Image (cartoon, rainbow, N blue to C red; front, side):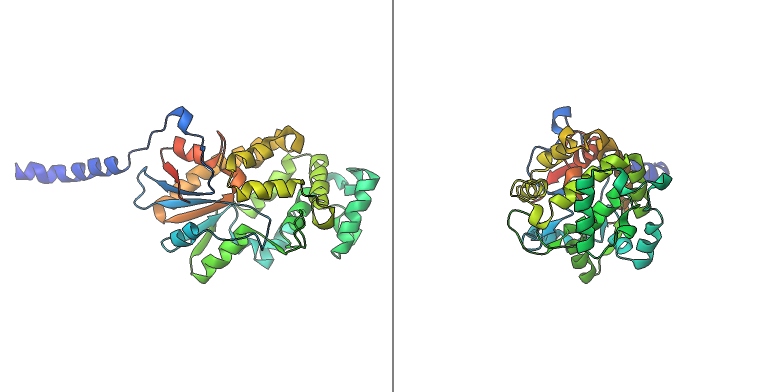
Amino acid sequence: MQKYLLLLLPFIAWISGCKTAEKVSYRPEELVPTEKSVFWKISGNGLKKPSYLYGTIHLIPKSDFNLPESVRTALSGTERVAFEIDMKEMTNMMTQLGLLTKAFMAGGKKLSDLISAEDYAFVREKMKERGLPSGMFERIKPMFLSMMFSGEGGEGAGAGDTGKMTSVEMELYNVARKRKIESAGLETAAYQMSIFDSIPYEVQAKMLVKTLRSDGADASAENELEKMLQMYRDQDIQSMQNMVSDEDSGMGPYEDILLNRRNRNWIPVMGRMMQQKTTMFAVGAGHLGGKQGVIALLRTAGYRVESAK
């Protein structure tokens, strides 16, 4: 009998492992999060230790930024912070220079071909303020220009705020570096650049104009950026997701390209990372809510995802 038990031990160990790897089941109506929270704990589905999901915003006044205490506490047990794109890659000069080759519109298109003369004059003036002569931006993909302006940390944020701007990702990356926590990315900068080719240049150009008009003195208390900032302060991830989906935003028809497809791509990558190391995932808060959001997809995949704020 002892011999048989010894032969069965590996099988028993395997059975035990299967029990710890059991998937968490949610009812269909429980998949979409209803809580207002930008910080979530991920557990179950075979994870030995929990990982975390932190919804960020890519542009926020420094005076508004405050890394939640729950995030700081979780970082003490975190071995890796994974962003949409590895911030180490985004802050590397060689990487940035390499991306410039993919930044130009195909077919000889120019920005002046895509928007009205009035809007073009406005954009040109904004570029001049930042020391960019027209020859430098004329053929660059408008969404690339929008990213440049969103991440540059310029003055103003609308609603009377005159403070410098920052991004939650950069602030979190700086904290992680000081704590010697490694960084990673769910996708590459080159892949994100390729997304631009899936959206018509005319739509990108309209988005660029809206971005610039919501900057500094051209912003009002009711502008798009201020609305998004208030939603983020309220941790209202469902409203943030709805804002991106809104047809009036001009980006609604491209929601699958900008959000849903990327969310689906991230889930297996997140699964592998969480099996390897305790990871904090920091992605735009607009990716969290909704039926195709990261939280619902993780729950569908068998993970327990609960607010950790």
